[in-house]
Structure formats: structure tokens, C-alpha cells
Length: 124
Image 1 (cartoon, rainbow, N blue to C red):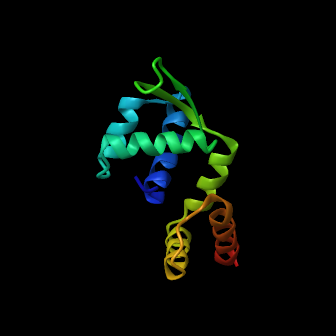
Image 2 (spheres, rainbow, N blue to C red):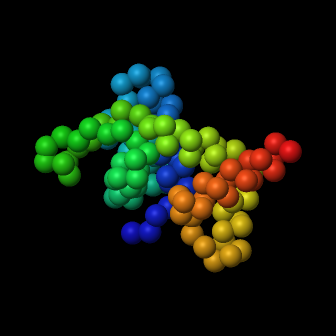
Image 3 (cartoon, one colour):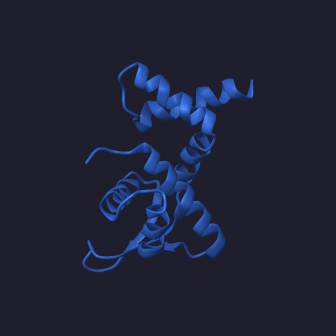
């Protein structure tokens, strides 16, 4: 399955809201149900939650065995930083357009730098 950076962005935003409102994070069911309202199915959501976890962008607790259930505690510092860069729709859409023009996919290493540069341009 390919990474879907729009889904990544949606997950980060949703986790931020849930962890802020509930202070204890968000469970698997609530997260998947919320994201399903945006047209995503369980399989891609679980895959991308795993990517966020292994990428160090979210803190997560998994039940045993590890494939069954999870509880997302919240965003890590790095997750907060990435979301801050992705949050503005104009900046996010411009970053996607720039990468598409060059035939590139978003990669954290240079994608974050691109977003940061676009944010600086945006704020003038």
C-alpha cells in the first residue's frame, strides 16, 4: 500500500483534537470511525497509524497480540512539528503541487523542509 499523505495529515489532526479534548488519547474504534467519515476504510487507516508510530510521529499503546487493538496517546514533538507545517491548506496544497510537478512523493526528510520554506514564503 502506498503512503497517503492526506490521510497522514487527517490522522495527525484527528489525534491532536482527541488527545486535547480527552487528555488520554483516542482508541482504535473512535479513530477509525472518525476517519471513515472522510472516506477512508479500516485497512489504510491501520496501515498509516503504524507508519506514524514507526516514524516516531505518535505515541501508541498496543494490546497483545500487537496486531489487534491500539490506543493512540497523542502526537510526539516531531508529530506536532510536522502537523504545524501541514496545517495550512494553501501551504499544504502548494507543497503537493510542487512535488507533483517534479514527479516526487512526499518524504519526511525533504518534505518538511519544503513545507517550512513555503510557510516562510506564506508569512512573507
